[in-house]
Image (cartoon, helix red, strand yellow):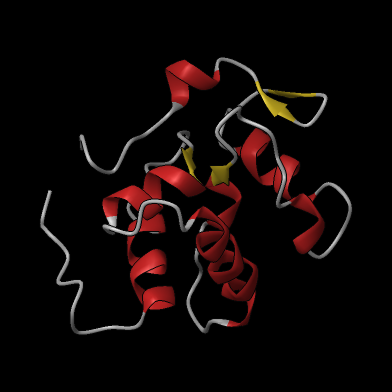
Length: 113
């Protein structure tokens, strides 16, 4: 994978770049993205960036980012009650009780890919 230049953009822009790399049908976590960006401990800031992603001119697949247990903790930031879940399901990702089924199998770690 091409390395990101972390020094030429703001943090939110870097989060968006990584989020756009998450493959269709896979999910990542706030913490994994924070670690990849060299800001371990800033998972909440990744969440804030993704909450703001809906205002971007290009599509940011924020629905592919969940918490470390596979929970759809960011779902209330989407326009509509089940939008995040519906988007994941449209990619073939099974969701039950606001949790990604087979999370460990579907998890995409930007540091490894």
